[in-house]
Length: 202
Image 1: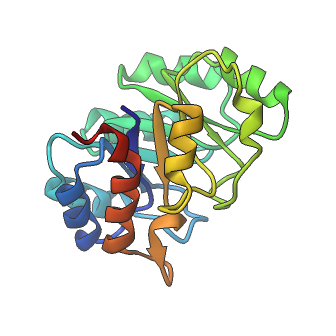
Image 2: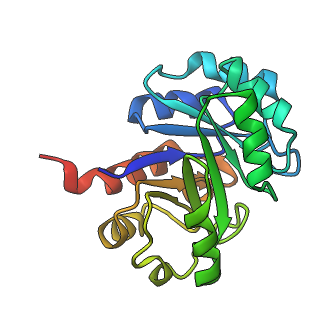
Image 3: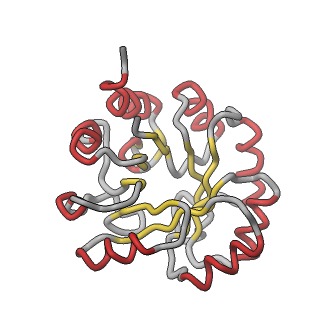
């Protein structure tokens, strides 16, 4: 079954809504340029509220490996998601500092972008249209992609069931698609989860 990641959670209410819906992953954004940026100490406090069965992912953009590894090794997050210019040398350095899993994000505009994602040594890859743009890329490019992936970019309760049925991604990642007026909306979160899981329900 396709897994769910609710990204960009910033408030205790977001965590409580996630706990009720049981996505496999939630995301805290540690990129200061993002409007969803969360200071590490605030993320640590929210992490204490999180259901222990839900994995917390930290989203980073060109952060130092030492900072990323520190948050992983302290248990503030379970996985790191890299959205910047991180390369294989960066991944090797990070692996020398922590054994926690890593997701590397790729902006997909062409078959060459997909080829680069396929060759990444990261534990998982995330395929997106950009860095949190909330828009879709051409899903037809994904035909035959050889490894499991997180699908992101422009997903919402209205189109995620179609994405899951057509592409069967390892996971779907959503942020703006479950927001109203810039804040996470529990009703949209519930609708998104229901749409992903509808074919798995007995």
